[in-house]
Length: 309
Image (cartoon, rainbow, N blue to C red; front, side):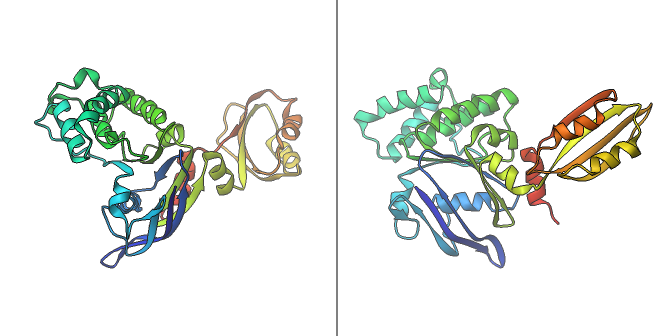
């Protein structure tokens, strides 16, 4: 549905996007991750035809941003990080105004306003002034704005920024519900929200794509090792470590701080081999206080892929 080809954007001599390529299929919820200045917002602004690229192109269905920007805009609903709401208007009047801009006919407008109020759960605030609303409710009104014309694609830039934990959960559930019928692209710094909401993740760093896939696919592609953390009591670390080192699939052993006859250490293992049963056989005659495999989190992966080095 969306195809980004060789997309490049320079601001004077600064390269914000460096020949990136990716595709988004119809019905996907895709999360766009990256540190500040990575190129996320620039990508979204080009995709929504707000900015022109320096080079490359974006195709949406049968249209491209260079030749068909109006047609593409009609397919997309866009919610920027700070929802551009008119604070002095009633919610109903504001959404009615947006419907007029979107050329929704008088006959269809009332029905659509009722539908969008129900979808975004704002029926109870339709006759309140926007400036009286909480930030979470304003985000809902901004989402209604983006969806008023029933677009096929929804682009959300930091939709949960500044919200409290309860509001974040509410917006997340709303996005997942919307994603059942639409293609959704989300940019966010809240990694747990992206992991909980999105089918697929694209990580951008310094204008380049450094990872693309589901969370599990990215975990597998970014790490050749996993860690087993072990804590035992009254054991001989030198003898135990020598035996564990001989297990096929163990690449290293790291001794951690220990006290009161308790030995703590990490066993680094090849991700292609499951050596847990072999290692447990070696230590099972000692009092085992802890034995667990540490899995990579999206946060760890993000830090690995976007660190300065």
